[in-house]
Length: 231
Image (cartoon, rainbow, N blue to C red):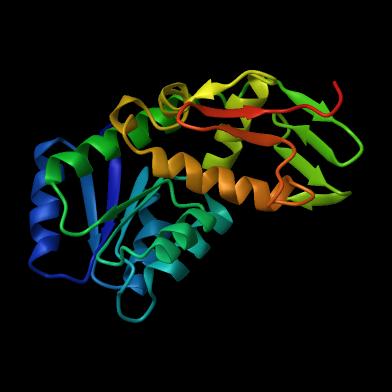
């Protein structure tokens, strides 16, 4: 069965072109011109991946993303003209898997869709059994349970995968390239900003003081390491 792609985009010039391009790659494509239509199609068709514009009538992409994430971990790619850092961070915070700004290259979008679907099918690193416990932080990645200072912490799928990669290599620096390969795939080797953004969000969720990190330490120009306080 072909993978099913839901594309929500209110640009009526762009939407048919996207449909044709994905159908030429033998995907089954559903298109929506506003957020409400996108949610109706999501409920009825259960797509394998969702591509969302942010600025849509009736219901914007942020709200669609929130509702999808309440019921599914299906990959979500934001395709939007909003390129401010705050918008990108907001998207990742809602559980977006990827964020592509307009104008864009169609081949890049197709490549990122392939990576997201491949990662979803393989379940990369998500099934690794890994735990960590100290006075402040408790992690059980197999059970997808994290708590800090006794309070539960909710991680997005990508945050979970990055934390898993770092925890598996606790005490050792994990180079950016290794993080990319484990979490996003080879097509992302130049996107260091992705890692920085997610680590920043993880620090705000698990560190006692995110400005003076204790667990997630950066090796400038190399990568990050998980620094255990007790093992």
